[in-house]
Amino acid sequence: MAVGWEWDDTLFAGTAAYYRRGRLPYAPGLVDVLAEVLELDGQGRLIDVGCGPGTLALDLAPLFGEVVGVDPDKGMIAEAGRGAAERSVAGKARWVWARAEDLPAGLGTFTVATFGQSFHWMDRALVAATVREMLRPGGALVHIADVKTEPRTVDGLPYPAVPYAAMDDLVKHYLGPVRRAGQGVLRHGTPGGEAEVLARAGFSGPQRHVVPGGQPLERTTDDVVAGQFSMSFCAPHLFGPRRDAFEADLRRLLHAFSPSGRFSERQPGTEVFVWGKGPAGAPPPAV
Image (cartoon, rainbow, N blue to C red):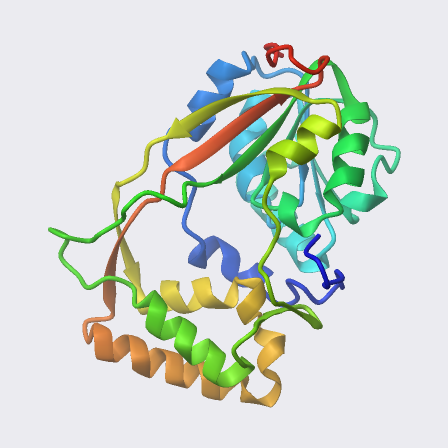
């Protein structure tokens, strides 16, 4: 976890309902890449740690015999359950309301453990060590995140870019200049260095794979507003009685940038790191 910050259960309070509409998807082809790299055949068990509303676990469900999502936010668990029912995979999906630090929680052993942009919120050393013990021999831990370094200009696309910088300024106007996170603040952002943490825990590797992005996306004002309210630093409860005023100002700002209510964006690429349970120095085996 970040230095000087402690987790509390309001971190993502109220954000779950906005996720599916507001968050950009992982790059097309992610499921196919994981199926090939991990040699998945519809068997085995997946645990998705910090599953949110099931974004990753539901996409991967066809590749496993059972999927288990773990998240500390009740709203996320409820959304994941609804998503599983909509995709007709409720019979092979289980959603557990718990912090990653509470594992193993009697959940058994798994073929693959995934962390989709969630590891940085956890006691990483503790969780990495615990999850390694929960993996079957030859299992893999997969860390998944958006590629942060690629250019994503909207040149040649029909609508204006989403005005992220102006939106950030508006959030700071309401909530202050230091990023909010639950009841605390993140003065120095979330921690990096996942590779060092996982290597110390005894994982081998990693293998790195990049699923290319760049595909054009069209987003509406409602999509962009939902995206803001899906973020921990912009969770609805942080605004208190000024929540409606913030949304009204946000919508006015977006209208000023695009009176049509349409924005162009490019799909971010997805970066995948596959770590094996085997001894340090050995390549991650296929599972």
